[in-house]
Length: 239
Image 1 (cartoon, helix red, strand yellow):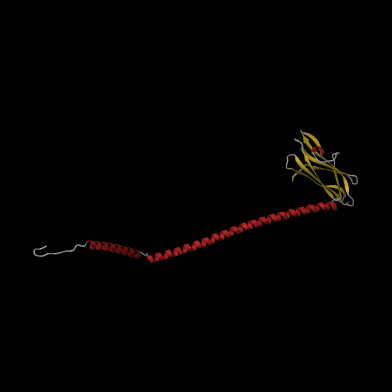
Image 2: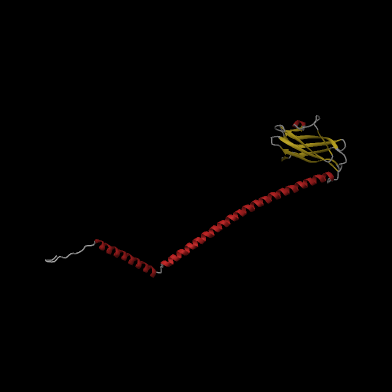
């Protein structure tokens, strides 16, 4: 203020702040521009980076699709393998059943051939088969005997069978008759039979404690045919 004059000045703080802020923003933009220019000079391109990221995203998506497709193919292959494995197991079971049927048919064919035309060419009464089968209870067994009339089926043959089990008890030889082992016999201890072609005879026996069987002696008698006597080793088979 001078003498005789009045000078008025307006003070605006917001204008100064705006100028400062604008200067700061301008400085930052300038620094960013210089930074980007430096990266561009060094071979870096923002647009190239964006394009590269897009390409990577497309590759990732393609790989995810391929991975999902591969997982689906693996699941299908595993399913096919399981189906093939089950089919193979079914084929093996069917083959085993067929082989068992063939074996059974061969045994039956051999059995009937033995009736019609035995290998030795000798007709008459004979023991075609003898088996010792194990029962569920200890010391219980089932004796199975098959009698046939070979080359002579013009009449019914009848008679009786005597069964004796040889063994050892207390280091001494013991002969156990069928009736003594609980077999179903007549009063004379014999098993009757009557047939034209063949007959299955089965007897359940119970061996005494400490008795060790060794063999089974079988004698078949008939009034019309010659008697048959055979001894079979004690070989137990599963029922």
